[in-house]
Amino acid sequence: MADAPAFLTKFAPILDELQDREEGSKIVAVVTMTGSCCPITDAHCMAFDCARELLLGTDERRPVAPETFGEVLGLLSLNGDKHVGEKLRMKGLPAISYWDRAELTTLATSERPWMDFNPLREPHAVQALQHRWVNLRFIRYALNGADDVCKFQKWRGCTERRRSITMGRPGFTKQVIDGARRHGVPLDTGTPRGTRKPA
Image (cartoon, rainbow, N blue to C red; front, top):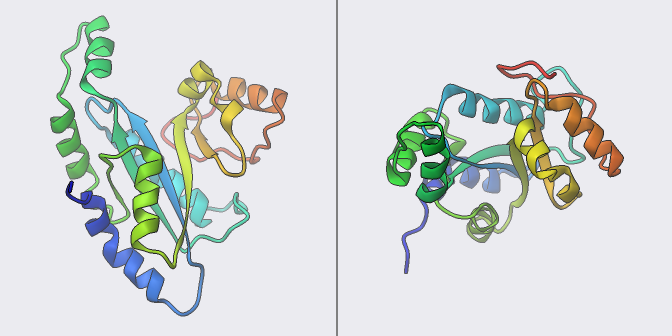
């Protein structure tokens, strides 16, 4: 049997305490993202920070979800070596191996007790959390940059059961908003603040 992913151990103190708590929300948002992260940067981590603030309601805006979350976790998955190698080769850049990128992700998230590297597919990671903490309810949010959302028209897959947070990117944010509206996808009125302003 394969070893349990390390994020289960890392998140255990937070989730055990939440599960044992007598009062308050037992709902956990899990923000997931898959990217090349060659290498991971502060901007990647800050996107998770912004999403967490948004979902916990710790910024000045109104809550964006119908639920009140007791906790928000972040899980970062990595694209495989073939995809990353081809992408960087086209730019004339060297690639970092999957396992080295995984180690860098673990190091970059080490001071965030609520965020970690995810070696599993995004839905499988949420299933692993739900299996371990059966008295909590987990809701996944896919985190993407607006450029990626435009490229693959990811708004088409958004539903109440397939939630998404899009980080604004210059030249792409308006395209995401227009595309989502054309397809009848309800939008929050705000955009998480970050290192880049919406365009």
